[in-house]
Image (tube, rainbow, N blue to C red):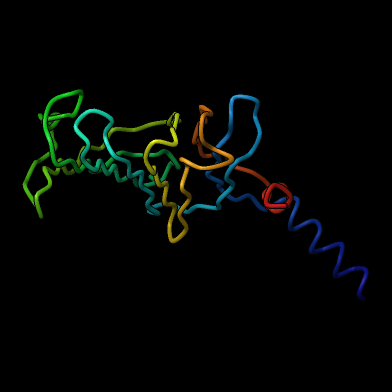
Length: 158
C-alpha cells in the first residue's frame, strides 16, 4: 500500500503542471522561481535615475499567463517618463503621483538591469526581492512565465 501511494504521488508530481514566474540571468541561471496563478499581481518599484522620483509599475497575470502592465505611477515628468496614457487607458493624480491606469500592455518577458545606486524592488504576490543587491545587481535578467511540471518547479526551488 505504501509503495503504491508513493508511485501515485510521483506520477501526480510528474504530470501536474504549474505556472512559474522565473527571473533568469543571461546564462539561464534561476534567480527567482515563484509559482503564480492567473489574476495574481506583481510590481517593480525603483527611483528614476534622472528625475529622482519613485516609479511603480504594476502588472497582472492574465488567464493566458501573460504579464500585463496595468498601472504606472510616477511623480515627475520628462526624462523618458510616460506622460500620455495609451489608447484605452486613463490617467489621474493620486497622493502626488501621476497614475496611468488600465494600460493593458501584454509582455511575454520583461528585462531588468538593476544597479546598486538605489534600491529596486520586485514584488511577486506577498514576496519581495531587492534586485539592487546580490545576486541580481549588475546583471541583466529576464522575467518570464513558464509552464512546468510540479516536480521541476520544486527542484528549481532547491
